[in-house]
Each structure stands twice: as structure tokens, then as C-alpha cells.
Length: 311
Ligand code: PYC
Image 1 (cartoon, rainbow, N blue to C red):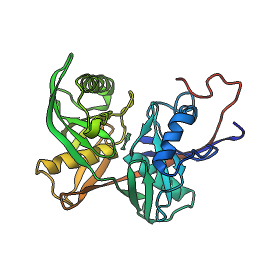
Image 2 (tube, protein in one colour):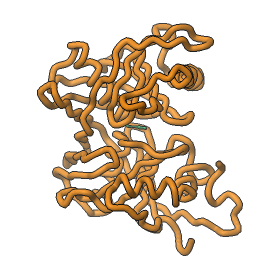
Image 3 (cartoon, rainbow, N blue to C red):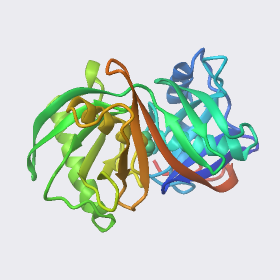
Image 4 (cartoon, helix red, strand yellow):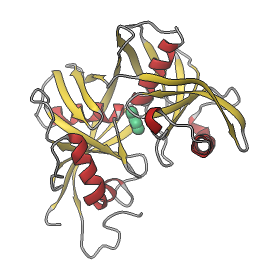
């Protein structure tokens, strides 16, 4: 590849996003979803080059800006991570909005953006706060029990927040940063058990995120730990995970439209979420902050045996 790949890095409530702004040959396709499919089949080496070590690490979510599906949208975006592609990404969308502002492509106000799983939007405040409008969230199944080897029976809810989630409360597991390795091991076992028992989202959708929840403190309604696809865990309270939780709360009669819900990550960062809609279609709003951390050119030296990342 001639030249390099231009990126802008940010973090949203502690979780990194790397937005590719130049140097990635535009994937073909008529829609953002088509272009995501082209990336998967024809350009997966670039995904690995951008997010894997030695340039990245497992927690980085990449975002490629692509043409929008709708004339009113400022851009389309495809999110990807260390093992593949995400439908939506809440923290990532907040990072994309701050990146577009950093590049002078938008100013405070409203922006529409297209993702492979549908149209989303965001409001950027003058103080840098971003409120995203996610794709509609919904519950697929409540109180699903699964036997997890080494843990026992775990009961949780299956919900869509732009990705598929299994949400559970395990009273014996305290959700702290110090326990992150144990929490990765525990949630990985739960995900493996879901897969082994054929438990999926609607239409066989793979449940690739596991969200543990515990009562919150100091004004937060809940504390959360989210295992992302692969072995990464979300440093932020997870935008799509917060959205899935909002749908579960509503289904249980515990949250009304417009009622605020504050979800805190294990590093203490917070998202405020709420639902808009009438009950038929529930649209999550998630509010948080992102900060630009770097602007860089990634070089892919043909002589470098690891130019496409450590697979
Ligand atoms: O914020 O939706 C999110 C997210 C998904 C994976 C990592 N972050």
C-alpha cells in the first residue's frame, strides 16, 4: 500500500475508538451494509492492520467512514474490532461525532449517520457532550437459564441494543476494575455456554456480548461489566449494552419513556440513557463524552512481517 492510513484516535468514557479518515481504499457496495460485507471479504487485512497489535490492542474499536445511505446523513460508518465487525457501537458513535467535529466536518447541533444496522443520529453540545439516538432496542427473551460449567445455572435476558446481549446479575461477582481478568473469564464461559446450548437472539443472531450488572452507587443506577466479541471488555458503560438494558427495564415495567438511567463502568465512567417512543418502537438515547487523543498516519511497511497485525 502506498502512503499510509490516516486515523484519529479518541476515547469515550475510557473506551478507545480509531476513526480511519483516509488511505483505506473505499470498499464497494450500494449501502453501508454492502460495504461492510466487502470489507469482511476483501479487506480484512486492513481491519487487522488498524486495530491489532503492534499498532493497536484488543480494546480498540475501529471505524471506517463510508458514503451514507440517506441524503440527510453526514456519513456512513462501519465499526470493527480485533475479531470482526460490529453492527452498531455506542461509544464508537460518540467518538466518531467528536472526530467529525475535530476535523471541522460538523459543528455543534444534530447529525445523522448511517450504520450497517440502520440509521442513527447524534446531538453534539457546545461543551462536547454527545447524545446518540441508537437503532431501536428490544427484548428477545427474559429469564433465560443456561448451565455454565464451573459456575452453575445462570439466568439472564436476551436483548438487542444494536448488538445482541445476554444480561445477567451474578450476586457473587463484584464488578471492579481489579477483578477484570476474572470477569473476562466468567463472561467468556457464559458466552460459550450460550453458544453450546444454541441460545441466540432473534433469527439466530449470535449473542456476542455478555453484560453483567450490579446495583450502582453514588447516583448511578447500575454498575456494569461488558464482554465484547473476542476477549476485550468495554472500558465505557457500553452504549449498545446500555440500550439493551433500557429495553429490558422497560419490558419489566421498571422504566418509562424519557426516564433517565445512569449506567457506570468498572472504571467509574458513566452514560446516561433513556428511551423515546410509545412502547411499539423504543429508541434509546445514550449520552456521554469523548476526547480526541491522537492523529496519526499508520505505515504498512512491505518488509514488516507483522504489518497486518498479530493474528
Ligand atoms: O459502546 O456499544 C458500545 C460498544 C460495543 C463494543 C464496545 N463498545
